[in-house]
Structures are given as structure tokens and as C-alpha cells.
Image (tube, rainbow, N blue to C red; front, side):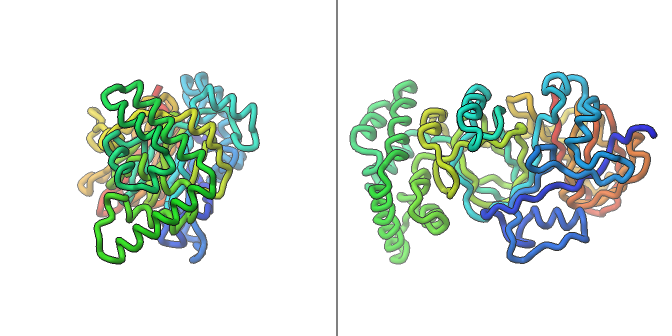
Length: 422
């Protein structure tokens, strides 16, 4: 039989504790949309949907004409589906992992290593760093999405050091003075910022827990009295402390930018960029790795020394952290999120209600397509049979294959496509 090159996937859900619960979760809603037989449990968190071939969450193939059970097995048997450039550059592996995240409570403060550090960490501590790949990633908001990302502008950090004595106590006078005196000298700023952050992260537990308790008590009393607590970032502090009481990560809000993405807006997180997701739903795409260096807001393994050594200590305003999408000049329905790494690109495909037939154009690489809104009948010379697409459907499209959609919904369609444009 001729090889089927376009087929639907059934993807793996990760039920991490920080996920939104039951049908509050966008992940759960998409899973149910894609397969109405699925039972969504009310009290269970549905945190991540993994669309790809990562060994910890290899997608199942939903086409009974294909003997291989998972996408990873199929790619191993037919590596040509990746496209020749991707197959050669990434040794016959799908280079990206595509996800949906539904965040209820904050994820850990973390950064991802570059390739060189990833190889070293994996060799030394394979139990904590499961592979030797880098993990740049991009988050695209589906609902309003909040996070922490990169170091704040210097003047904001200095103003928190002045306004929040408990924060100043952890950083110490010497490091705080060095930061103040580094203004206008980028090299000195970077070193002083590293010293401040490292001092705080390496504080003795009793010291920072005492300071944190004093700070939370003070801010809670101010808030109860109707006072403005913004100079202490009070609202976010109390939110994080309620989720992770006594955690050093609560103080990171004075170093890191707080970012709020509206639907369709994105942030790109390159190697060594400190970040934490706080709440909301997003599409995420990343290099195919699970390497994370954590430093707070987590019950998991914390590697403070590695984190403090590796971080990018470059202050920048929050506006610089929003990653723009660009309309594809050859297709007005397509918006490209094309980060400065070769491993992945994401397309947002928005088909207006007036368009009833649309072709998902061929690319010289494999892609994964997720339907977020709308319904269509999909046909492809490489599928041999029509595939019904609806909210939550996931489709694997081999390199150089196109898919024609007959749109049946009256509101148009919104889809996201992950690929690797070399």
C-alpha cells in the first residue's frame, strides 16, 4: 500500500499539579473537542498537551492503516517525512515539541541551558538533566497569559531595593551599592546584578523565611488597610506566597519583569533567560528537550549554583520581551512567529468566515497542525481519505504535502502549525 503521509494524532496529556483543573483547562477542552469519548475528571489538573515524538509523551497515530503505534516509531521508519534538510540537520529526529499549557499556579523560576551546558549537565547529572539538547522555547497566548521574564530595567530593581527593606536585607548593602554605582556601565551592571541575585538565592533558609514572613505580614496589613502596595509588588507577592509559602522564589518578582500577553502575543525564551509562567493558557513550542534548571517556586530539584552561573544578566524593559508575529506576504491568513533558532517556527493560521476553501500549503519540512477554533473537512493526496477537523484535532503533515480544507464552521478557523523552516 502507498505510504500515508498526512494523519491525525492522539496526543499525551501531562497532569502536573500546577495545571488548571477539569474543564477550566484549555488542554482539557481541546482533548475533549478532539475526542468526545474522553472523560474529563472534575478535580484533576490538565496541565500540558504534548504534540510530538518526545519519549516522555510520544503521540499515538489515529489511522488504522498505519502499523506503527506512535509518531516517534513512524518517523524512525520513514525519516524522509521530515524533509531532507531537517532529516540531515537533526539526525532523523523531529526537532521540536509542540504543546498547549493551562497554568493555574505558578511554574518554577527556571532557565534552559545552551547546547554546551546541556551536554555537560547531562553527563554529570543525568537524573536531573535527561538529555544533551538545548531548550529554547516560545509561548503564544491563547487567553490572557501572565509570566515573569528576564531581568527588569536597573532603575526598577533599585527602586524595589529602596522600597522593600526585606528584599534589601537578602541582597545586602555591598551588592546593592555596587548595583547602584554600576548605572551607565553595562559590563559593571551585569556583574553587579549577578552578585545581587546570587546573594539572594544563596541566603540561609532561616534568614530568607524570616524576611519573607515579615514582608508578607507587612504587605497583608497594608492591603487590609486599603493602602497601595504596588511599591512592594504586593498583589503578586501575596499570590505567589499563597501558592509556595516560604519559597525564596517569592523574592524573584523584584528582579524579573512581569509580562502580560494578550491572545496572539508571544514571548521567546532563549538559552539562559530566567522566567516563570504564572497563569493562563498558551501554545508553546520548543526544541525537543526536557532540560530545566530550577531555582524556586517548586518542590522539585533546585540547582541554585548552576542557575546563578548561567543566567543572562542583561536588564531590559518588559516591552523588549514581547516577540512579534509577521504576516506572511504570500498568504494573508498566516502569521509567522519565527525565533532566532533553527529548531522551530510557529504559524498562526486565521481563516476568516468568508473563506470556505483553504489550502494549508506544503513546506519542505514536517509539521504538526492544531485546530483551536472551527471545523473543516481536510483532504490530501497523501491521506487517501477525508479527515474531519474540529477544535482539538491534531494533524501530522509530512514534508512537501498540502492539505485542502472545506471549512464548515460559520465563524472561520484558528489553527497553529509548528514546523522547522531551515
